[in-house]
Amino acid sequence: MAGLLAKSSSETATRSASSRFIEHLRKFQDVFTIVSSNNGCYIDDCITLHSSLKKPEDRTRAVGRVIKCLGKLIPGIRNELYPVMSSFGMPIFFSLERAAAPYFGIKAYGVHMNGYVERDGQQFLWLGKRSNMKPTFPGMLDHLVAGGLPHGITCKENLMKECEEEAGIPRSISNNAISVGAISYVDIDKYKYKRDVLFCYDLKLPAGFVPKNEDEEVDSFRLVPVGHVANIIRRTEFFKPNCSIVIIDFLFRHGYISPDDHGYLELLQTLRSGDCS
Image (tube, rainbow, N blue to C red; front, side, top):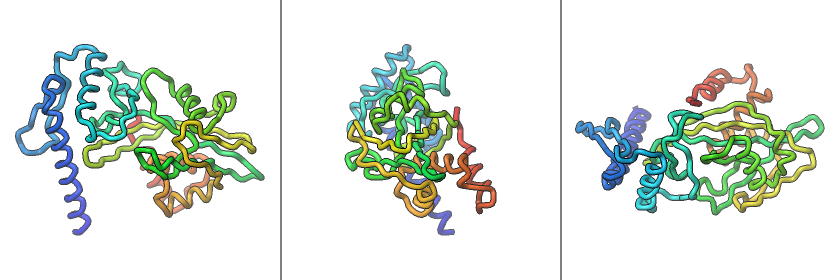
């Protein structure tokens, strides 16, 4: 009963937060058209862009102006545009500030790379500790390389760019990164409805390679045996949450989680059940 009450309380809080965010958008009637359900339930409200906004660039400018006006309501503005599409590779409806994507429920895409080395038959993962100055998840553990996929760049090109910026990995090495699939997840937190698809890569690095951060977003790096990384994920909350998911995918693919482990199929099904459109 306590669990049901907690869930009900959480759902009520989420609906209340979403209703408040919608009320902020009502102020911009030249940008948004909001059709209310009139039944007191926010979830049936329909929000569309104003019919006068005919072209993608018009929509981009109009929504961008709204985001600037919302100010601190959307923290961590990065001045980086994400494409808004019905699904990956489809025509772009407009482009949206990266930090604002979850506030509008827009599906975003990113690249995540597990960088590993092999020494004496054992695998190690390079991990990064996020800078304490990061607007999101400061000081938490991260992949060696990860980043959002902005407008106008391919996944592989974006990955190589992030490799240079975040870990000092030259393109002669990062070009060898192998695409190993994609995963997705949904996270709801107050105003935010975060829907992400992550394109996953593995890169086997030279045994003597030492990463070096070039953009001041990483505080430090450490090389950790893969088994120890698995224990950190299982026993702590030190990792940025979406990084844990990508590392769990690595653990499955490299045999660190086997069918004889308790909960194997349930965890695998959860990992593979997301919407990767």
